[in-house]
Image (cartoon, rainbow, N blue to C red; front, side):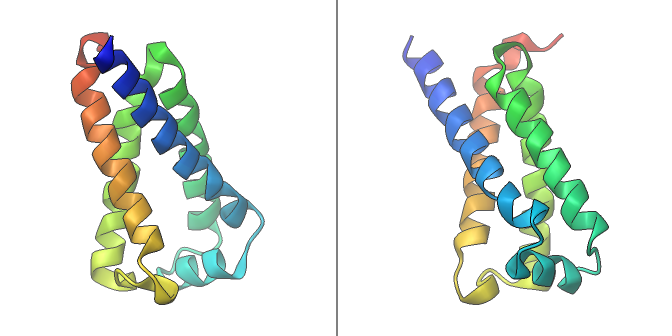
Length: 121
């Protein structure tokens, strides 16, 4: 029971972080446009990443697909962490919030994969 609660808490935390960043990506907020311009991926990378994050959040919240959502979350956040460490810097925009979000979602997804590994089909 405790592991099920932990899984739900981690799934909700990861999904909320993924979903709250969608506003910035889908509305073309200057911070998001600047980030993806710096990566050379504006606008297709911003919109594509937003769509992938939306799908990932939904997968995380559906019990039957949460394992696959966690795999997708790890992949997306591995990319985000890579770009922060190589091109953007940890302190993008003056703080480490985006990097912290990426590491938090990645860690949560790793733990979710471990907890939900029996759901692999």
